[in-house]
Amino acid sequence: MKEKDICRIAVFYDGAYFFKVSSYYLYQHERRARLSFRGVHDFIVTEVAQREGISPSRCQIVDASYFQGRLTAQQASEQERLFSDRVFEDALTRADIALFQQHLQTRPDGSFEEKRIDVWLALEAYEMTSLKEYDVCVLITGDGDFVPLVRKLNTLGARVMLLGWEFEYERGDGRVMRTQVSTGLIDRVNYAVMMKPLIDDRVRRHDPIVDNLFMPRASENSDWESHRQDNNRPLPADFVEGAELAGNIVNLIAGKGYGFIKPKMGSDNYFFHASDLVGVLIDELRYDDHVRFVTARGEKGIVAKNVRLETESERLAAIDEDRIPETSSLTFPQEGTPFVMDDRTF
Image (tube, rainbow, N blue to C red):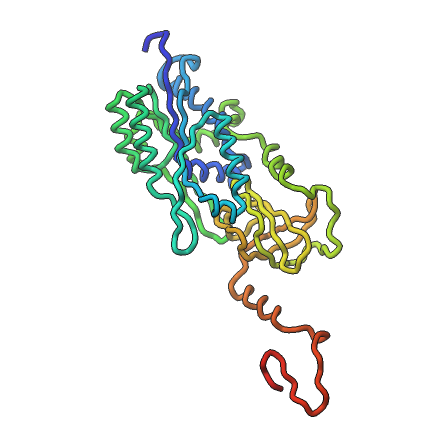
């Protein structure tokens, strides 16, 4: 490469994979912060410069693309996701990342899944590289299905760098969750960068390039503060600290790690954070899910702790209790007449 030349870099995000990694660092890792797009891009420039043997000033990210599934407008509205999705899109725009989306497919059980988004990423990466002649293409993924793409990009003269994460953690219900990177993909790319050992390396613990991979911790609480309309409201008159209540999810900002629960007994909504979930991840929750929680006093009002999904037996028991009228509401007949309650004669 001539001294005057610029190393032209393109970054391609597997959105579902990147979101999973970012959530891991926010909810499971000691960092307790999401990944920063700008921080990731600064890291890429530094790493490419080192691998290519040139000055970082001669490396430039000229294109960045993010591929992910998308809820329909109706689905996003039903799950209270419209605002959080727009906030995420704003973050991509500020980082000069182009967003490529395709509607999610609905499974029979009502959950969602991505289909064909990886094919779209591969086609766009190949077409854009052939037209714009990138020097280095950076893939942020762990999927071995991208091995043929790496071969094709190499035939176009582009080197391929992989940013991959491998980690595991135990959920509240005892299940072990793992994220791995395809060994075939690691072997095929020109530059494989395994991020977790690099981030956890004590030697680089205070390296600015590594620290800047994460958003400041203060931003985690700012999202909650900006959404709450009752920051300074007094505690409800019927509030009892440490009580176990049943309720329904009425607002869920999964991308930000929090939501609100409406108690079945009425009263004000309770705020909950993803770190207070038991036996379930926030990405697995849905609007109107039945949950149980313990009431607590937070810095800004009432909060829910030890939030868990309500079991079927608990839900049915609650329904039966609602059907039994209180004694004070019964009208007792005169002596000698049958007493009828719930279509049963006594």
